[in-house]
Length: 264
Image 1 (cartoon, rainbow, N blue to C red):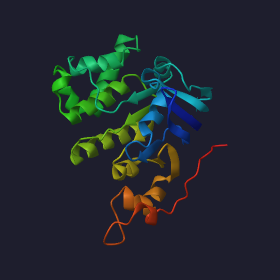
Image 2 (image 1 turned 135 degrees about the vertical axis):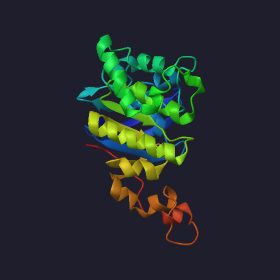
Image 3 (image 1 turned 45 degrees about the horizontal axis):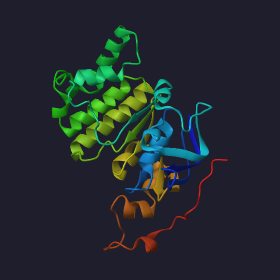
């Protein structure tokens, strides 16, 4: 469905952030993209959705192919029309509008009002809490409620693939579990592919089919989620599990080999 092949991204024609990233998102699957702050995860999503342009970023090498069509450095509005929807980091709701108005804006590309009404009901089925908040000004919602609203707003646009950037950030564990359960339900019921950027590796790996690990603009490890979960480095540095009493240095524990990854 989506192939990112050896892309490099530069900001302001100077700052090299991605240094040959390659990954795939198969149709209908959840793919997790893990890594520390500054690894380039959010930049990867923006390169796919077209949101690099407003930040003076550009794909300078490689290609991004979506359903057989190249989309690197494309227009973000066109990406939305193609079914590529990004749920941005930071819960960027329209603060002065009600929750329902936020959802309606998400479905604005849908001209059929009756279908838009059915889409609203579907969102409320996934997120019953939002039903009680229809008329609440969204700026006054809790962090978890705003995250639900953002995912619901993305659903209104009928995404084929949803790019989710740190949906668990700043949320209580119980809320994170609820949101991830609903995301998994959306994936299964709507057949929506999901590329999930997440620092909560435990939660991401629990629901993803495949995972990639990023460091300093490179993909350094990938594989099925259960295989990644059992990797000793992932246990040590992302899951907080160590076989020894004290944490080791990164250089001592690291078993996987740094390399550029190519898809062919």
